[in-house]
Image (tube, rainbow, N blue to C red; front, side):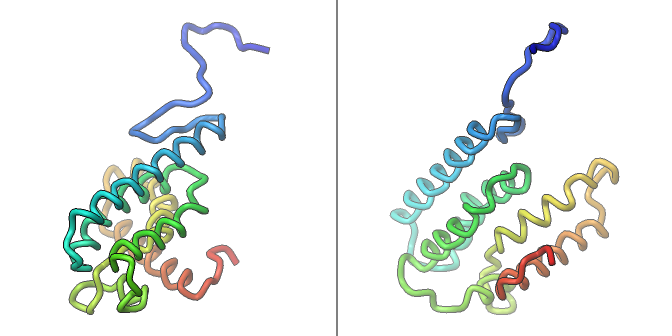
Length: 168
């Protein structure tokens, strides 16, 4: 049943840029769980260190936590069930455990429009997953692809607010 030895080792999973990939779903799920645990630990740490300013908390959430989740969720299947929980945890972090002062859709707006530019994590991951295979073909992220990614993100964010599935 083993393939012939070709001078290289065959592994069940490998790590590339911090993302575990391979045929073993248990290893991939363990990697996701470990990443989620690290994100929660970071949120707990920053929860104790930061002021109660939602602006400061949104910035820390995006830079220290959501960027990690967005990157990994865009490259690895299996994150879907964790993203909703993570978004709720981040909302709780931003408002320091109290009831949110504004609607979630307002948080997603630009600062000029009265929001905090918090990411719709599922939308960003979906947009990344749909556009990253095109990047090598284009050489770099050009303005058209950048605009496409922005539009996909905003469309998916609007759809997720009213619970319409992306694939109809």
